[in-house]
Image (cartoon, rainbow, N blue to C red; front, side, top):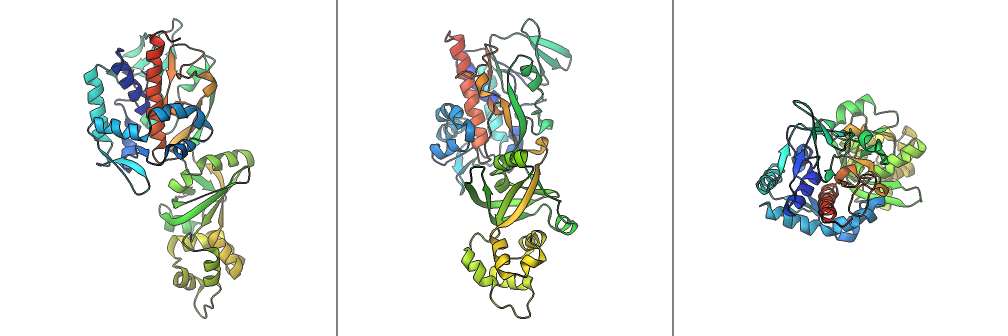
Length: 405
């Protein structure tokens, strides 16, 4: 078992329960480092929405992921966590969290159970690929070592947060074996705005949330995606949960056209007619800022963003001002670097894998987790699919060992 993130640990758990002798190798000094980082935000384990819309969050890969996620859905994940002594609760947004809102207790209980079951952990062992005779090569503290295995599960992550172990260094080793790997790209990431922000906006407001707002993105087929939430203004653009929800569409639009449009409704609780009526009320000697604050409670960062993006002519035209308040366009020109992203898109192409997640080009080698070619928004979908594919790969190994070739 190579990779000590959620997918790797899930595969190890299934394998050792099935009677396999499991040795788990990880490049870092300890396992689960990115998992622990996710815990800083409360550890969003999964999402409590119905399964069909849940599966739809995986986009183009939903069909391939469906059998794995159905076999280990949100209910099964919560029962699994409870079996580790970690009760969970459903938050107001239907996101599921441990009651402690911490990752460390779950990881400790999980590792204790794996060690007690016989899983052997090898830290500071970075996988280098295969030797000519098929042995697994590792860079270890004492130098290169080799190990032989009847079956191998690769759960090496994507390429975000390299300092935590997910650096995409596995790609050349698989490509050398003839395995097609879709390019790794940032997912659930921030974006840079065209021209950058003014010094005033950046120095005064960078790092602050913009809420509540609704965002809209026009798809290639003309359909409009809209969602309400919040995002954060950064030094170079925007990031945060509302931006992440559209990151796949925005990233692909930039790749095709060089830019993408992200349209903001600064007043989602007001209809367009209400906004127009309030904007057109006589304001007398009051400034526009005072008028908007009084009539629509628009102030602070929202007001500054309106001034930043809309021109003076728009602000002096009440009809155009009302339109800008309900549809303020931000032009995005580049996703932030992949190492800043929460997760990655791309990875081992599904065509390279059979239904057990075994590589067709290398029998006995299975892949799981984020290194597969899929992506999903934040909200528990990422972790659920990592655990589900890890368990599926472990079950695939047991089937293969039993002779179901």
